[in-house]
Image 1 (tube, rainbow over the protein chains, first blue to last red):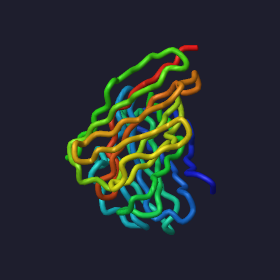
Image 2: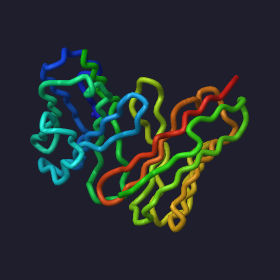
Image 3: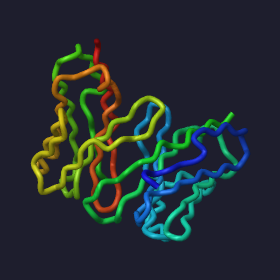
Length: 115
Length: 110
């Protein structure tokens, strides 16, 4: 596609339920990132994929968070047993390579509200 | 750990005035620096990318400078318009990921 695509754009879920957020990066981009932006906070790095591998998962806040990437393309971020503090915008980004000087492009985000 | 600071946190100017947004970072070993714009309820739009070997980059009314040795970048927006109202984020890339500042929220008054 023309840009980074994320779905759903908005999700309201009950505390304790699991949610899946999807990211479809720009075609041909091998590097994929997930960031989180909580209300009034800066962007927080969650995880980085190079191809299907995740060499850096250091930003995942707890073991309730997991992510995978398949076929070097689509990625899914899963949050199990959601808590109210998980409410945030989850942003996906991609670029042509991890360790390069190329532009990183962001999607519109998935807005998660846990009630 | 890279720390990125943006000053001021908020800025309000009358239409037509030039905007100056500042960004500083603690570790000068960077690949590049990117400036983004974020509108309310939206994702991030990339405005300018400056490679570590460059001193400045220009796109239309936007000009960004980079002084890597002192850990500073400045985004200049000439002749501001109400449509420039948004939050502007600075991000530095060291190794593979971006580290972000908290942003400067700009309001341009008509």
